[in-house]
Length: 249
Picture (cartoon, rainbow, N blue to C red):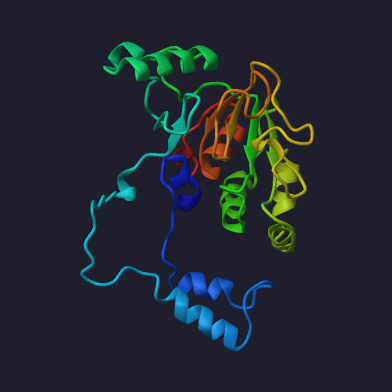
């Protein structure tokens, strides 16, 4: 997720140096190197972390433990606020181009500046995409949905990221959790991330999506997208509106 979204944030590339957890995960996978090739790969991967004492042009340290769940309100991934925040006001933006972009986004999203985003009704929830459809993402969503029902007003699609993820999820019984909650368990693919194979929003519909892009029409002509985590998506599916998952943990 971090590597994927770093590109959406304007980076040319995003990389997290592999650690022992990553290497253990890769061991024995269908497409992982075997034998001596595996040993060579591990040696190379362990060379990727930055050398001790390396100097950077700029270093930014973020305390993720202090972050609230985040969600977007506009039509690019950078237009995000904490789940308990309010929709920004264009008149509070000094830069003219940014002010106009915000005003246009809010008009498209039909959102009122100054209003809280928490509690906004949603028509569809999409849990999937290359950004958030790993087995760990599905487990996190299933943990929230287990023993609960999604809102009857909200359609929920759960799309695993690959056939391998799908098989593992099925071995763990996750599809049953999703189906019993009222979700649709789908085949791996892009699906509603970019309105493929008929999985698209109708004009004016709102979707909480775990994908990486919320541009105008991305999930269907006239569709409106709120980007969020699998946890927030699952909580919102239950409530039928944007919800703070911390109330369910």
